[in-house]
Every structure is written in structure tokens, then in C-alpha cells.
Length: 441
Image (cartoon, rainbow, N blue to C red; front, side):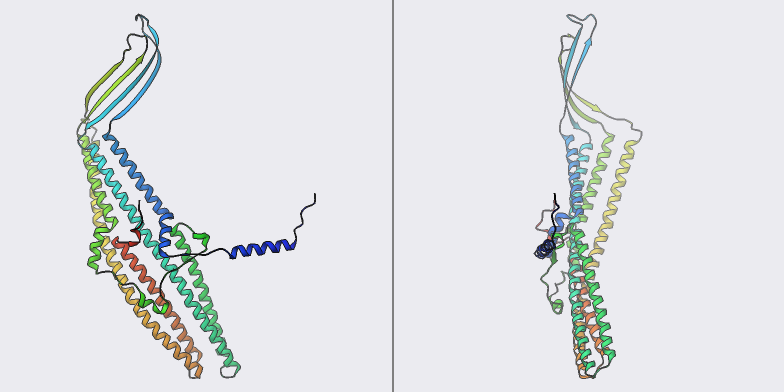
């Protein structure tokens, strides 16, 4: 059987179709809300916290089971012989037993266990909420970092365009005999350096995108996506920046009310107190009611159906100091959690203050960077006119261009640092509006 012939035309057609299909791949645009939604669905830390909450919920169900009757059954089948028993002394005996028991009172052991499990569940819920808050801060920081890198690429491209224009002008002046060869060489060096800066800016953007994808826990649309926002142009960033939140005292009050970590430690304190009650319950007896019914299937007269009802008391009078150790352990755990709560309260106060002060500094930094950019722009225009008129040299123009590019970059960096600072304030106070529309369980 002859082998099929692969023609060059087939390869060309396949290549063309492959190229067309790739070019038709659509790019997805993602806003901040889109990124947050993707993160809340796919971030593994959130998934871990959810499972931890489910575990605590299951532990509470186990604890509450002690409130209810315990019902069990069993069956047995055997061959039994009893000498001199009438009318028969040997037979197959089948039995079925039904047992019911109900704990009546145990001096706080069961209630302490249930209370501790309930408070631990509330603590797990608060921890899950705190994880959401931490992840939202992380995704906002990564999102703003991507926007920052995209803006810096624009700055770098603008600088490349300016240096290309300057190189073209230097060559024209050199050909006309107005300028020397050193101006051309200098312009070529500056253009090469700025192209290298553009290359680095693109690399920084890719790094920032990878970091964002790591936080989201997914690569949207197989990497064919772009991050967008409704922000202003670079020249209007300062004017359009968000306002600072209310005063620091109001933020501290908000943090005391809404910070999930504080609620978590408060619930852990209650759980530790309940554990002390549970441990002390071992000093006292347990009172329970029980009932047993046994059904026999046999011709042996000895085996008749039986039932038994009763109330029993079980009291361990001495446990080798095990109860003392449990109580001491529970009390130590309570003191530890109380100390952790006080430590976390101080950390929250510091977190709120640091976030507010950092945001205030960055807010002022945006205004200062904007003023500096305006001066640098004016300086570049003057240097450009002086160079064209022959009053200034290329070195003066290059310094002005470098200063302008640096101030553009400073404004972009400071602006997004300010946005991240505002996100830190939201996380520090526990007031994150982006989460209000989501079910966090």
C-alpha cells in the first residue's frame, strides 16, 4: 500500500489555518471586581479555610449527639447444651438485643463540650472571614501592581518615541552641518538605554501578572486577558485620586467592631472557658438511664425474653490526678488565649495607625509627584526649544528628558502605592465593601 504524499501546499495551508485560528482568539477584559470574583472561587487558601469551618461544624454535631439517646442493637446465634434440662437440653439459640441509654446529668461535661465546640465553630467562621479579607487585600495589591506596570510601559514607550525623534533630529542637524557626530552617538546611546528600560518594564509586567494569577488560583482564558480600570490619564492621576477615609479615631472604632480576627479571638476565649467547665465536670459523677430488651429464639426453657430498665451513676473517685491535669491544662489554655487576644488588639491598633499614616503619606506624595511632573514637563519643553534654536546642547535635553521620565514613573508608582494603602486600611478595619455581595460560607 503506497504511503500518502504530504505536499508543501498542505503544510502551507495548515500553517495559515493555525495562524488564523490563533489570531481569532479573543482577549478577556477583567476589572477589579472580576478579579476578586475569580479569586474568591479559586484561591486555595479560601478552600482550606472553608474545609476547616466544615470540620468544626462536624465536631459540633458530634458534641451535640451526647444530648440525644444512644440506641444500639446486636444479634447472636449459637449451639448451646445444658445437661438435664427438660424438655430438651440442647438446641440452637438465636438472640436479638436492643439497648437504649440516655445521659441525664454530668455536671457540665456535656454542656461544656458543646459550648466549646460551638464557640470554636464561630471562631472558624471569623477566621474564614479574615482569610477573605487577607485575600482581597492581596488580590488588590497584585491588581494595582499590574496596572502600575502597564502604566510604566506607557511611560517607557513614550520615552522611546521621544528619543527616536531626538535621534532623527540629531541626524538631520549632523547632515546639515549644524551639530557634530557626538550628538548622534549620544542620541543612539540614550535610545538604546531606553529600549532596555522598556524591555525591563515588559518583563516586570509579566512577573506582576504571574503573581496575580497565583493569588487568583487560576489563569483566566488561558492567559488571553487584560487588566482594565476606569482611571485617568497619567497627567490627571493626582486630580482623580480617591479621597482619604475618615479620621483615625473613627477607623479604630470601626476596627473594634468589624475586624474578624478580634471576633475570632473572642470566640476562642469563650471556647477555652467552656473547656474549663468541661474539665471540671470530671470531678463529679455521670447520671444516665438505660434500657435493654433481649429476645430469644430457642426451645431451651432457660432462655426467656428479658427486659431491664434502670438509672445508674458512675463516679470516678480517683483518676491518678488526671482530672487535675485536665483542669490545669484548660486553665492554662484560657490564659494563653486571653493573652493572645490582648496581643492581637494591640496589633490591630498598630495596623490601623500604620495603614492610615502610610496612606496619608502616599496621598501627599501623589500631589508632590504631580507638581514635580509639571515642572519637569516645562523644563523638557524649554530644553527642547533651546536645543532647536542652538542655545542648548544635547546633554541638557537628555537630562531634561530623563528627569521627565523619572517623574512620570514616580507619579505612577506613588499613585498605586496610595491605592494599595487604602486597601490596607480596609483590611485593617475589617470594612471591605467588595465582600458585601458575596456569601462567605
